[in-house]
Amino acid sequence: MEASQQLVIEEWNGSSSTKLFKTATITVSPALSVHRSGSGFNHVWRRFLDAFVPEGFPRSVTPDYVPFQVWDSLQGLSTYIRTMLSTQALLSAIGVGEKSATVIGATFQWFLRDLTGMIGGILFTFHQGSNLDSNAKMWRLVADLMNDLGMLMDLLSPLFPSAFLFIVCLGSLSRSFTGVASGATRAALTQHFALENNAADISAKEGSQETVATMLGMAVGMLFARVTMENPLAIWLTFLSLTMFHIIHH
Image (cartoon, rainbow, N blue to C red):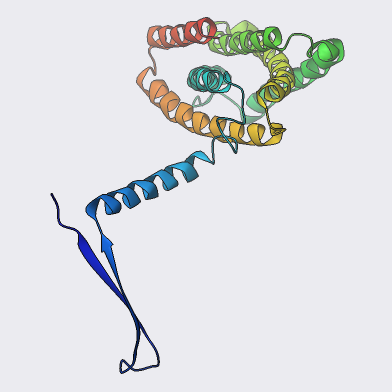
């Protein structure tokens, strides 16, 4: 049995130590010290979680919030890794690193790619905007599948130089549908999770979660891109494996 320690607290009256006003003795046990240390760790951990979970968690959200966010983060991580691989292929097809490539040519191709995506997003919103509330889960699945298709187009672009511009524009068009459908259905899902009128808090904390997933995905994606560089078989195996994981665990 460990001995208790005594802590003597003295309060002095005046600037000098000549007049003793009050003396108190407090007995401190080792168990109390451990408890305080554990409480301090729990407090720090709780403050850390406050940056990523809604206030009042878990009572402030529905029971399916945590499973959804876990799988959504894992799927997002796989998406960022595949994005790094497809972007590497796209830049190679544009001619980055080749002396024969011109800056104006690459800029024009990138401009047409983005322009196609913008126009596609407007047209998709015009035709389907009013239908996105009817079945949020279905449109969420459609958004992810269209995003997968867009990345696949970028990865295919170096294989067909004569049809490069058409393929990358098709991929950009596909991702434009993803942006509209994903953004619209996200609002519906956030309202579903909110139990205490805290949809804004849930949305903000989800942004923090996505930021962490993005940083991890970028780091791992750069590693994969480096390891699989100039190895098409490894690139395709990695891309297809992550795509299957993304679809199956949706």
